Image (cartoon, rainbow, N blue to C red; front, top):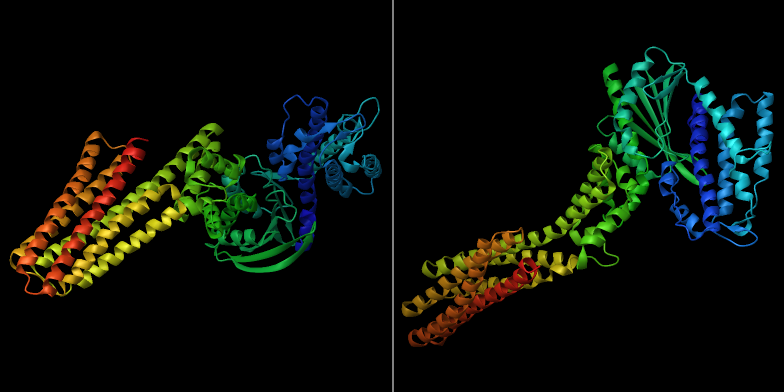
Length: 632
């Protein structure tokens, strides 16, 4: 089908090598499908033996159908037949692959007598394939298909082996030279440096495809132009053709996925290609698009640079849509594209991620370390937050690519990913503690504002207090949103809501100060109570700071300091009770009228309620630290 795309593009000079590359890829897929049939029969004959899945072999030859991994284990037999799930479809695919293998040989010399004999032999062996009605195969059918020829009896497997030999010979005849891995023929002298530049970029990143087939390159000269064609991966309508004439590059790219086409264009954004996109056609029932980009290079060096960069990007298109789908349970749509773009920019790619299991790899890490933080149906971004989830997935793509390239064991890479995810889950607690510390800072600002305003009244006190209290409310809202994502951190919502009651009470006092302030003994009693609130707010800041250190494995000294701060907040609350009573007594003695009495008593009650709220927050934090941080 890639040759059909080339004909649509109008580059028939590239059709023979494209047919040859497709035939060699079909040979790999046939080997896999023959092995699948053989193992299915073996398991059906001996069901007690552990079944093989051939998953690695399937991925290695570029077949994406994960359902095939269960064919062997699900195969069975009775007295009349083998039952192999999907057998009818499997045999149809085998027939299609055999014809793809025969096509370049028959096209190379259609008039030769041996070509006619090959066509008859192919037709006869394919006609002899069983129908596999209801996915049942008669005894002996699988052996007849997959055995090597013996005693003069032909077989489909023997035909495939014979075709492979002819294809190897045809490949040797077709390629006049090989330039850094590109099969080339009919080139002019000025073409070779440009092909070498393209291949230098391609070879720099090609290892990132790991076991996936693809990236075969053909170069030729036609109509006074250099033509470079790369098959990218195994998708039939996925082709790129590059034309070079007088330092003008024309890139034609075909794809069944519009999103991947846009991704390809975005990768080349640093180069001023002018793009035009058209409907390409339909192949195998799937519509594909054609995009053509034109770049006028300033000189030969710029032309070679653009070709090298273009070659280096192709590996990041292989299995791109599959990777995007595998990331669906962890990131939002825009972040999935951003992650794949980042992986391409870093020259890490996504194939290592897929090679080690893709989404299953991440789900295993979640199952091992997320605990109660995630529930069925949760997306990672909804639990960790978008930035944290994106940061973790960046680590996954880096760890899988670099781990495979370095020859690290899969177990080590998986352990590193689990450890990284555990750190991200613990990071949320650190983030919430930091948020609580910011809130505590605002409570301290309010307490200081009230204390200072009692001694030196300012007109702006109420306005400044409203601003502090508003900022504190925003932090509480952020905590509630975080806990909505992570219900296992509900303690921080309770903690901040308690502390926010103190902020509300202190803002009320700042408002009341604008209505009047006492004098004499009443003022001294109110100052004493406000001083206690300032000290309690300081101890609250200390407690949260120590809790954050303990969460990172702090020493015994930090634990002592934490407990002392929490205890002091409790002591201050008792002292505030006494101070409020002393204030009430002084107000009753000194108040000139009921209005003045009510104002002072309201301030006292609000300040005492603020100390109560800080004590309540301290007790919540104490139980969490002793039970979960130090006790866990």
